[in-house]
Image (cartoon, rainbow, N blue to C red; front, top):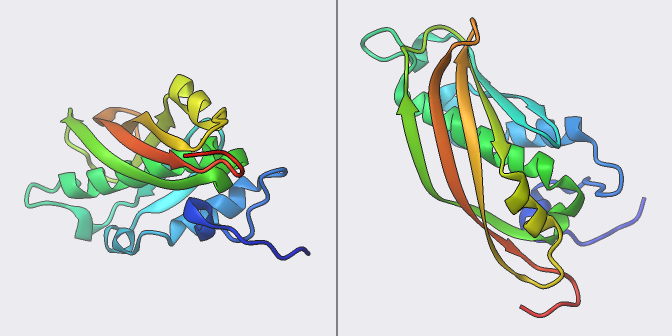
Length: 174
């Protein structure tokens, strides 16, 4: 085992091997990364190069006064899924990412969310290619989409997120 310095965004994943990415490892670490998520009961159930999935179990504690899943809980799951989708998609170059910050988001609540729900997130592949192909340090804009589905695969909400991603390419100028 070699000792190495991991800085920036990837520091949260100290055992990350960009040459042989272990997506299950990324999922496990991401599960505990946002302390607030514990209050909502989110479960990061999948991280891959293509998408991330975050679930909210059917818990009384996430329901509102009408018996549906609270909009804040849906947003939390979508937010975590969007960041996790970036982690999975950018895993091979995650050590060059200094930060990923949510700049803006839109929400469209479409149907009552009942029971267990899943937030399925992806990132824009064209914008991601710019981040992954960076030859110079800089700031990039990136967007993601999240669909929240119930147990019957009905879309109960949709989110779009705009991120700012700072990349530091070793040996390149800013």
